Image (tube, rainbow, N blue to C red; front, side):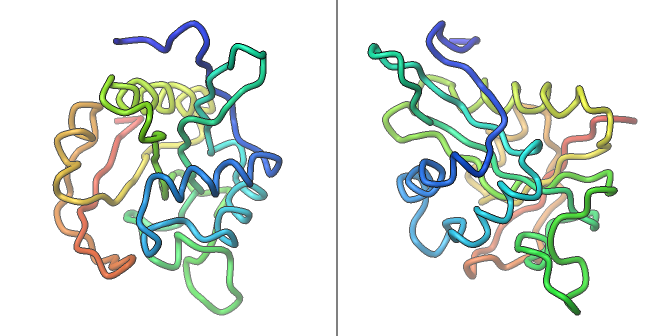
Length: 181
């Protein structure tokens, strides 16, 4: 599969998608690695245009969230714990920075029922195309575990090595997708 199915589509996420995003996070990550409800609400409120959902239309005509990418614009060249959360007075580089040229992806998840058919690769490629249209960003940054480096590399991300960010106590890797040269 190289394209979405005819009953699948993407659109930016809004605060109205909050409940579905929280459910999807719980399906995709162990508790300590999930986006907190507070951070999810923050990202959907202040950076909605950088958050994308993958939906499937059901036979009844409803839509179901089957994947999401939650992101904000960050002020640093690599993702930090402060940059993953909401803006906190007195905490340097915390929260969303609308004027930044860097996007930090904080969550990529595909519903486990839909994995194994390259949907993650297709969705991430669609996300990059979606972000590219704004022409407001130079880089998309992400941290991920070592086992996911080949997945992100196939989409075009470059491995920058071990991250200093220790979210959930994990040893992760910084990766970057350069939108401009």
